[in-house]
Amino acid sequence: MLPGLVALAATVSACAPPDVTSDIHDPYEMRNREVFETNVEIDRALFKDRSGTGPGIPAPVRAGLTNFSETFALPQTIVNDVLQFNVEDVIHNSFRLAVNATLGFGGLMDPATELGLEKRDSDFGETLHVWGFDEGAYLVLPILGPSTERDAVGKVVDLFTNPLGYVLPSPEKYVGTATGIVASIGARGDFAGTVESVLYDSADPYAAARLLYLDNRRFQLSGGDSGDAFFDPYEELYGE
Image (cartoon, rainbow, N blue to C red):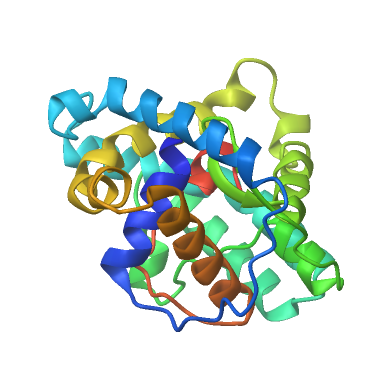
């Protein structure tokens, strides 16, 4: 559940998007709650007994891993920009990729942001949204946490849409995913207080996590900008 948890925590910590959740469609709530409880037990086993710190990863190392995995994922982001006919972001992210891959020593650093080429995310779930597909029912995925039917399909498709996956040999093509996982584990400690307040202090942790996820995702897809501080580990794990 790590990716979803850290994303929720970053949302609460970085911004307060308006409540755009006018409708919650959760026909699989019983099954979702079972998966949610299993995910919480995994989180508790990995982090809670260590006061949320998890494995120790120095901040500079984690920053480098995050930058590298984000740069590795940019070709996939550009593919989604193309599919959404978002010419501005295609150009923006292409320049960002070129700058970080060269001046950023293969993506370990992020000089593009300092040059005004800030991070602009996209994924196939957003592409489906642009194409007019409804979000469908709310889902809780094993390990990954909160999602919707549309975003779950998007995550599967995003596994196969990074051009680097077809160019690089094994095991090099999995480096981006591996570094993203490590960076996500380290980020869990950064947001330990918020994550644990949702999971362990809420009257109904499941309902709290569901509302936070749907509010944030709908805010993003409506064109809202939660700022550079927003951290979405789905990118790190699947190159979105």
